[in-house]
Each structure stands twice: as C-alpha cells, then as structure tokens.
Amino acid sequence: MSEQESDADARIGSRLQETDGHEELRDGHRNGDGEHGERARATGETLVEIDDLTKIYDPDGAHVTAVENLDLDIGDNEFVTVLGPSGCGKSTLMECIAGYLEPTDGEVLVNGDPVTGPDPSRGVVFQSNRLFPWKTIGQNARFGPQMRNAVDDDRIRELLDETGLSGFEDSYPHELSGGMQQRAELVRLLANDPDIMLMDEPFSGLDAMTKELMQEMLLDIWEEEDRTVLFITHDVAEAIFLADRVVVMTARPGQIKDVIDVDIDRPRDSSVLTSEAFNEYQERASELIHDEAERAMEQKQQETQEG
Image 1 (cartoon, helix red, strand yellow):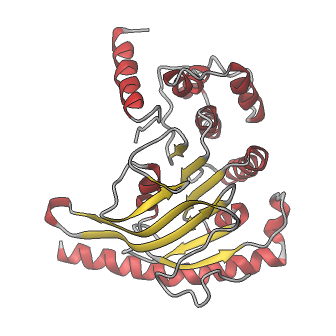
Image 2 (image 1 turned 120 degrees about the vertical axis):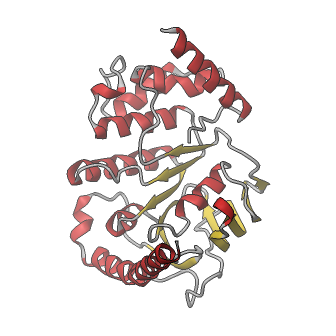
C-alpha cells in the first residue's frame, strides 16, 4: 500500500471513529383524506419517528425550504419507499435520518432517542457506490467492522455468497460491472450489521434487467435479515414492487401527499409486475406523482427565470 493510500485510510478511519464507526462519505391510504401534514403511521411497532421535520437551506443567501412540517413513522422491519419529483426533499429526509443533516426544526427519533449524528446502526447506500477504489472487495467489506473491532469473516463470506460475489474478494471495484459494484456496496453495508438501511436510488444507474435482479436480491436479503429499509426512488414500479408502504411526497417544500399501503403477498418476484393489483397501485401512484412533477417543473422554470 502506498503512503498516500495509508494516509487516506487514516483520515477516513478517524472520521469513522468520530461518528461511532459509521462510514460517512457522503389499496388504501393510511392518512385518511391524504391531507398534507397528517401523520403517516407505521405498520407494526414504530422504530423511526419523524416529528414536524423542517429543513431549510440557505445557499448564497437564498432561503430554500427542502422539507416542511413532515411527520412520518417507520415500523420495525418495515420496507418503506419514498417517491417524489426531483428536488422534493427525499434525500434531505434520508440524510436527516442518517444524522448527516441537522433539522432546522422538529426532530428524528430512533428507538425513542433523538438522532444527533451518524451511527453504524443506520447504514447508507447512495446512487453511486462509495467503495474505496484502492481496496479489494473483501477489504471494502471489512473496513467498517475493522473500525469498530467487529470483523466477522464468516459473516462476510456468507454475504459475498448471498450476493453472488464469492470468488471476487480479491477483485478491485473497477474490475467489476456496475451491478456487481452495487452488490459489493450492499455487502459493505450489511457487514456493518445496521438495524436500518437507508438507500438513495441505489439502482437508478443500472440497466433494466440488472435493476430487476438487484430488486429481487434486495427483497430476499431483507426478508432473511429482518431489517428496516427506507428506499428513495423516482421509479413508480420499483417503489411499489419493493414496499410495504409507498410514501408519496409533494413538490418542494416536501411534505407527505399520501401513503399507499401495498397489499401484495410476499415473497415477491417479477411475476407480480403484470398482476391486476400491481397495475392498480401503479396507476394510482402515477396519478399522485404526476401533479407534483408538474409543480416541480414549474418551480424550476420560475427559479431559472428569476436567476
């Protein structure tokens, strides 16, 4: 390993220790009439409580409210997807749960305790993988647990096998396809043994077939691991296929427009995509998101003209 790589590891390791080991690299609706601001209740025992969350950005003196007065409960072992137009605050919501951002107002609670910063119990996967290019896949998987003195090689081998990456432990990220890199990212996440998986459009850059396979693999892992997942997406079909509940957000400032309870039996595979129930959910979600996408586009046009 070069001196530059050693220095990079040391800097990153220091950041992880400061954040308790977290790798911070940056058919019915439950809400009755679906009015904005009404609380979206969890299915089962509540793990995450988001109370009156508001986040305001102030870039260059501009007052930008990303999310406003948002209330949401997420249940233990629940799979929740968040659907909304670009710029509606989906990623802001996720980063407040992760502890990367501090709310301007309101709070996020996990197991009743306020979120005050990143924690290894809340793992994050982003749209582009955050694998270290100078480390092998096996080394990437071990890095987070090493920072906490909690490496479990048997567990890592099991995860590599489950994700079809056995035999690629000594490969570097650039030697793998995009789909394999995202599988390695899942291994990296799960090796840290998080209670909550926060996923920000992790499959959006993949081709259609690889994306479908990754969705099915994620569901298999989730059903076996009994974890809580918050999954952000722009893809209506993906949101419905994965979720127990689909949270539909408004254009900025982001609020909850509606919540769709997805009553489709599990386990699920691609065969449900052609079912009548799936098509009905998809039509409903598309109608909800269409108006908000138009509003978001109008906002963008107005901001461009004013700029």
